[in-house]
Image: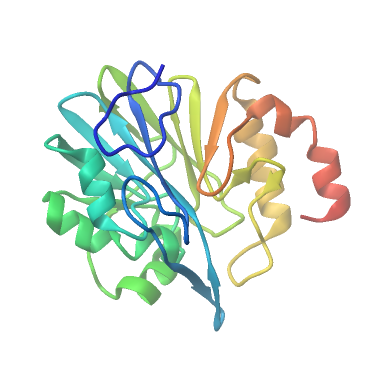
Length: 231
């Protein structure tokens, strides 16, 4: 069964009714609006679709990686109080809306400081509160646990809540996050997967920053394939 949240384009199975999704796909006409933007790095630009997660209950929420269209995110949040903006990393498609979102929702942005140089490329000296490895946030009777998982970028994190992992760009359905750009490292992301992500229960549902869901077990079973192919 879905959430029945007004304006929600997609409903996922809830973690105790906590998890809501805005699927922001460029070119898609959704019940929210047409959502469109680009990922920019190293002088290149690519159209991207982003998954934006809202974690909370009927009163309070955290927004994870607000992207592309703040009105669409605000429509999903509704009249609930936003406790904070949690960023999985500071590539522009995940972070450049964050300062505006913080002002609109009167809240703080949280980011791992190892991505400060990427943050500055998009947002200059806009403020944020540093995330710490294994830090926690309380929401709706659950804890959101932060795990530092460098590789796609130095400050990448994943967020574990209940039986769900919001993996940002650390892990996707079919492989690890890309490591062909500046500040990224394939060997480092493999270590993050082996030593952090793949230590979680195999049935943990993985909801990435782009694309479809998967599970920890399904991806852990393919780690040798990832290493052999080099991505």
